[in-house]
Length: 111
Length: 118
Image (cartoon, rainbow over all chains, first blue to last red; front, side, top):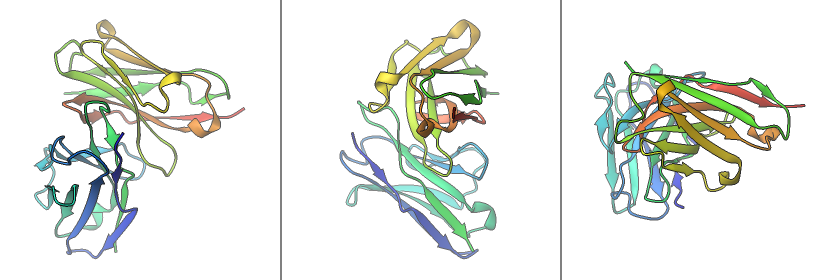
């Protein structure tokens, strides 16, 4: 089994840019797609990015996803931060043995 | 429009078996490529994937919980059922089901909170 490791928390000011990383412990990050989910308090997760870098319908273009083979990690970048972006963000991927694997989640604070 | 809804008991006693039902609309679990997953989230903690069932009735389980979980489907009722045996207070969590396509959980229910307590 592989593990997806995310920072526990990040914080940044409104208008700034923040990047959340998701590092895969084994197997290549580029072999299987990575999804990113946003979860606001008291709500179910919703997709912000699928298939590494595809924004979900209705997600502003301030959100972008990428993968970096050299660090075996995926990243979610949010530009022009707004207070409404404050939420928990989870990455998710898979392999042939594990159909769904979640990262531990990152709490984004916009202060 | 895809909708997904979880239902089940809000409270179960330790050692009991939990049965949760996922009722969905807007898609068919008989369509090739279509799957449904169950996920849980203890209060203040991370998401944990539990099980997945696909259109061909293939079933996949979280390896650490495999011996306690059973997932099944009834396509005629548009339902997927998850049972978890030998419940413990550490299993207290919000339980979600989600439509899953190409390993992307693209439509989630609102979740149902299950508390395990005597």
